[in-house]
Image (cartoon, rainbow, N blue to C red; front, side, top):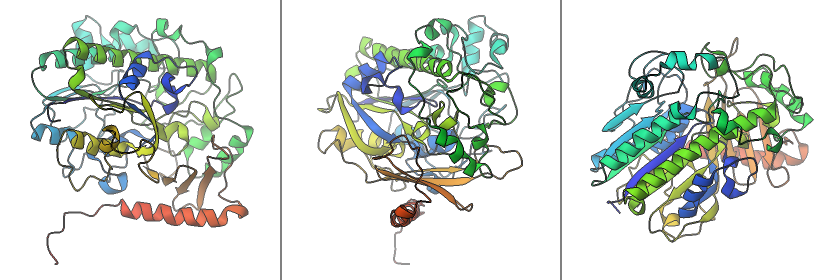
Length: 492
């Protein structure tokens, strides 16, 4: 299968329950559904971190955060010893391209330092909003159209959600233009293309015509009960996010001291101090609709150039968004389904597995070894993910892959007057154990009885034995994923 191209589309902060093909209400994803009809939807896919940089490092290296050690957003450098998937593809003879966000090291008010990523063509855009001039391909595209990025985005600097810039000047439109050109220019060679867009990452300011498609009254309610507000109090000394817990059923509310995963900057980088959760959700789904349009453009250009039937297509998001679940917004040091459960679709030409849904537990760390295996390439021993290639080839069941999944968090939010927290998740498909290390607290949820994670069993006397067993399993899982270093070649 060496002659197959690969296009990997990654949205930013998109929840798993935004796919219309899985029956979720409020969303409109006809093009993502077209992709799903050609491929396999993995309905229980989990991110290795509820924050950008460690998640992206995991799915590009095939390693868990505890092994690759890239735990934090805003890091000054990327470890030079880590080998990225596009580098491996380039070494194997593929022509490689990157469009959009990389975010393997700091991007706040600076140009990201590129690692040895292996990309032959590199069109970088960390986010739509202007923070500096130079080396920002999306902004260069805007200038070519006679649009000053700083002037154009200035009215939206302090907007959390609501109508925003026109569709013709959006980052997703730029990404589609760059992708079309790449695909058309390289139709006679084997290529690998990564497309990483900012949507639906806040601020949620979709074009007005997109926003009109989504009625706030039609939006699904957040997973929230009053008991959630009391539950968040146990985190107040550890996690600034708990201080933004509110009752989302109140139309407007003061969320107090909101958290942010960035340094001080435009207001939109922190959650809003007042909001209507249904209007916010409508804006969120309108942002997802732009992502859907991009997927449609990619499918169309592949078909028009005769490459659709020889291109592997992957669609994912790096992590999700709370969107009012449990009284919380955005992302952070939690492992609720809204932030760690993500969309994953893989389409392999000629596969007998298409138009089907897998209920197996899978992880984003599995994608890199999957693409290498499907391409007939060796999977490096350092990669820890488990390839999905046999499932995608129809050789094994779609409902069994892993007995558990894990996720990690360390010090990616900046807290005022507080040290960063460290936490880990262990989920076996029914029970989810979250441990907030060194502070003596945790969570235990039973998804069979409590799928929306409202009732924490951590302190339940009736669940002590279960908790002890899960703690041991979680510890063993993390030890096994901590890495083994260079390959052993002799007895000593």
